[in-house]
Picture 1 (cartoon, rainbow over the protein chains, first blue to last red):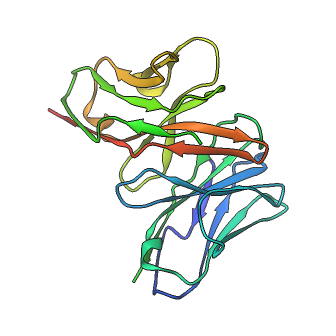
Picture 2 (cartoon, chains in turn purple, yellow):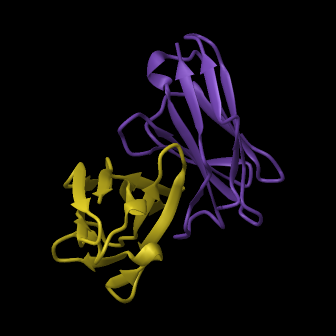
Length: 114
Length: 115
């Protein structure tokens, strides 16, 4: 158990819809990162939030956006869903940004886009 | 940008045999390396990490890894595996810059332990 929780565990959407995924960080952690893991692949970095600001972004289009709240919980929003967005979405919390801190992962949300 | 190559996509072994999962990374001035394990339908669990210091790193569940700077490798080893070690293993390098930190993962190695 890492203390990082995600909801929902599973989700089915249709192409063109919008989705919001949620993450609750480990206590005391102010940095959250989001990753997309397609089937049979390693996780890919989407973006990172630190103290409610985006703090780094991977190679994902703007329709992937996020929020971090004062209690350091976080949301990942994906607009205009595409079939290729079907994946396991993982969030990871860490103690502080800019430092080489271990990232602790939640169990993930599995999204299926039909 | 950093990159990670996991040289074997699948490694089948028998119970109690030794195993080595291979990982190479692209060279950089500062390298921070991690191994994570993913059991079916679960998130990632940290096995071990190398940040600095001793090149031999010991982790959980009897795993260890050796950082080799000259060969840019960070291979994971276990002297005797159990059925319960069957899982997906990911090697990752941490990319740190002014904008923050991101883990760059390899594609994973499926370890299958049979009796």
